[in-house]
Image (cartoon, rainbow, N blue to C red; front, top):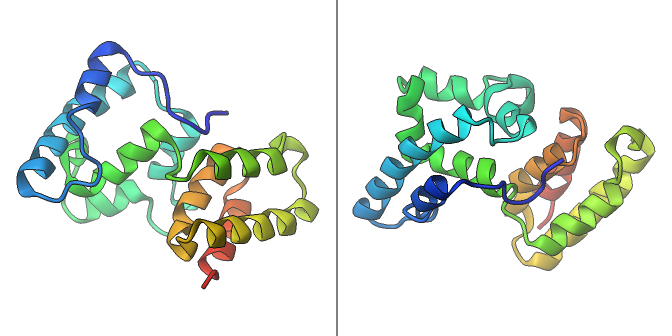
Length: 174
């Protein structure tokens, strides 16, 4: 189970340094997309990305049972390795590398509550939902963190339905 940043090889780190996941100019965006297009095949080749994170991208079940995130790209005409250089792919690459975009204290508190996912039961779901709402509220970002909580629950090994339940709980934060 990986909830933080994956280990990167020297060449991968050099490419990562060229990526601005929050780019605000055309030049920065283009540079970031070019580096992402070169980085992603390296990560896939050495199987550096945890399987649960890849499933988040290519399994429809982890997108509410609709199309997978991969199928959305393909449906919009971007296919194969061209996906890796697309501006909308950067947020997925960020998750693949760094995990959920949440403060470390939130990740560790949720990981402590979940514990070993094989022992996580339906009775543990409401306390997880409650803690997620509380942490989202106290962070000041509220419902904007809903997808990041889904990603974290995925990383922690929970089922898609449990992860979605936590996501919906955070989505309800005002």
